[in-house]
Length: 412
View 1 (spheres, rainbow, N blue to C red):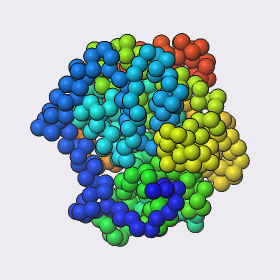
View 2 (cartoon, helix red, strand yellow):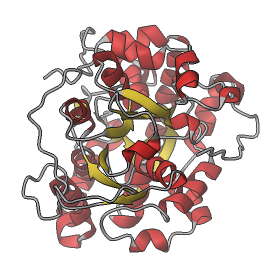
View 3 (cartoon, rainbow, N blue to C red):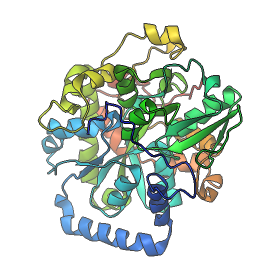
């Protein structure tokens, strides 16, 4: 299937009682991991696979076909894992976040990229012991709308898609909606909406462009290259770049099981080394990276064209986005997507605070009890990424401050 071309045959699950199972099934499957009876077999299977692999455990990547996976795929394509003395298997593509987390918990994959808010849910909501060891990228997402919509206010009374409740996309969208006097709701399909209400639905990223083209939704907020795909196909336009709302925010991060970190710290270090080197290479080789990730490459990691990926990875001309208001903060001098691996503590703290005020489905009891400072230190293990960054020239190689500290900047 060509995900850059619109298809009008799509059904979106907007109702808690809808039987389609496209989105709620995935969400409920992942939520079910909180139950010991469901999680135990997966955990046991994962432990057995990890023990069988011993110290020679291969790198088994799980990913979604989005630019968030770039460092993992570049490291695989350029044999950076092998350069670190590791064995690798062919990266395994998944279509939904629920699928990738289930495979991760069961040990079928052991190196994944995951939405930064979702890591909080996995560790504290489903109680699966895993840690963030690096960021995969910064920015790289946007709010894309139908061509006839020219302002956030015009989303009132309409439906907007997000990729997952626990996503930076949901967090930023709700911040933007609130700033424009709009209220996010989750209503039954075909339910009437007030002019100040925006109905949120969860939709797999690969289906968003089709849904927008088919007028099933008024817009979506998601990782690239689906925003660029909608622009290229002429079915949507970027209303706001996510990095223009939260400066250099993380989206996806590298997630490792705690058992691998504890039992194979050298393996974890080598994995992190390869990912950091992949990010450094990508920063200086954007067009080559676009081709490598595209359907034109022999590996066919994603179904996207080199042109669409280049629009994300290599575009530096923001004049049109500044003119339209999609990029308002001209002094930020950001790329549409950029790569730097250090997981700032200040970001995780602010993320927890914002997520606690964000509407999400399911039981949020764990989230409301979570202390931001505790989460920032407990969720993230930065030992490996610090060493990896030092080995390639230090923080300056990525344009980072020498003390690896920063202040979070939001301009909703």
